[in-house]
Image (cartoon, rainbow, N blue to C red):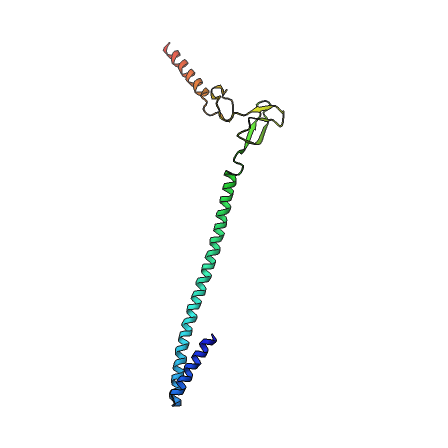
Length: 164
């Protein structure tokens, strides 16, 4: 700012050297000061506007940072749920021997688990190769075919009775 002031004063000094009439000199100086003030006022407006815009950008950035943190937290939670320990699962198991319900954190490589109540060994069938041997009494039975066979047999029996 001091360089600007020095240049301004140098311009005024040159004008004072050229204009000898005091009234004319004061008029020119006042006009230069008025023009300078107009430019300064406009410069202040531009700086205020720039400052407001910068502040708005800063506020927007804070809001975006907050949203980004929320998204990263949500993604982290999803990753933890989906991938961390993806070989281990929490299963609710009902012991077929004592009907004790318990939750076990087991992986798909585990073939059997011990009931914490009766200490009997419960065999786990992960790939359900023995669907045909299903008794239809398991809690997850939803279509091994035994219920359908029973219904088909009842319908055939009803049809035979009607034919007689």
